Image (tube, rainbow, N blue to C red; front, side):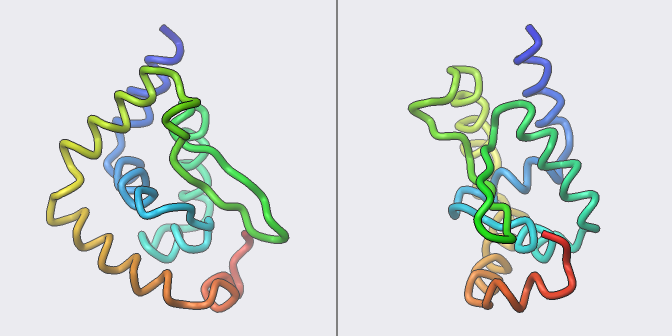
Length: 121
């Protein structure tokens, strides 16, 4: 029951759902997520913490950057796999997801050091 409630809490915020949709493109640094959504770093950290607690995403630190990615399907619990599939099938082709994907392409072409300059990653 606790895992289910953590997943539903994570999916109850549209910004967290947008983060999940953005992570379909692959691993992203906190700075890239902050840039994509124009949120304060503390807001991004809170959203990522909730998604991580629900096991929907995983993280890895590399040098000064922390990268987040979707939970690996083959390792994730069934409820997590089903939740991620549901989000992608239901919202992956929305106008908002397409606009985020377009902006993310630009961000991914930008050097990470430039994006993260001045941000605490």
